[in-house]
Amino acid sequence: MFSKSKINEPGAKADTPTPAPTAAPAPTAPVAPSSDFKASSAAKPKPAASLLSSDLHITGNLKTSGDIQVEGTVEGDIRAHLLTIGESATIKGEVTADDVVINGRIVGRVRGLKVRLTATARVEGDIIHKTIAIESGAHFEGSVQRQDDPLNPGKAAPKAAPVQG
Picture 1 (spheres, rainbow, N blue to C red):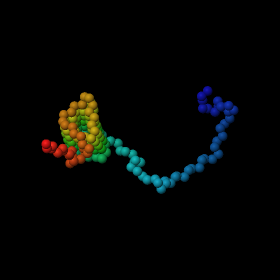
Picture 2 (cartoon, one colour):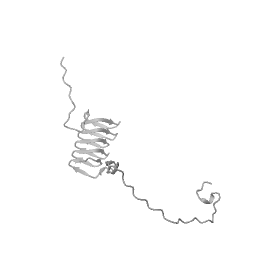
Picture 3 (cartoon, helix red, strand yellow):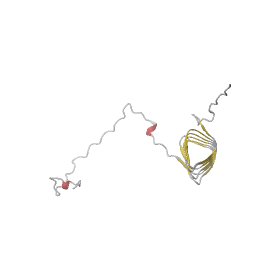
Picture 4 (spheres, rainbow, N blue to C red):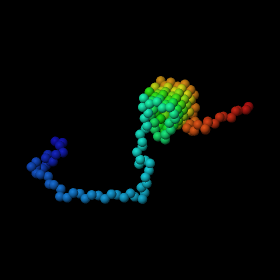
């Protein structure tokens, strides 16, 4: 009843062979880009995040404009666009990124536009952020400071002038 076969269509006969096409369709010419076409960075595929596996131990600083996911141990500072600290990871040093997601352990300062401590996070150090989220169950020892530009370590938050009265 719901078959797509032509046998079930009215007027079709099962014994009638289907005629073969007489000529192959003509190939189409490639379309030239218009003068409005401009290559953009959106056309390039975004590279995958660099993964530092759980059996990797790095002593030294890491810096990238891309994304990093750390599952191992890093003794040094890390700077990235998006930094994800895995549950098995331990970082001993300063962490700076636009977006920081902490599932593991950090001993040191954290700087980020968006900082997120998940329930498995353990942070021992100060957090300087624009926005922060701390899930229930996260362990945190240190101070939290909001800044409009937390990624710039030379730019401290303005201090209030003393009030004389």
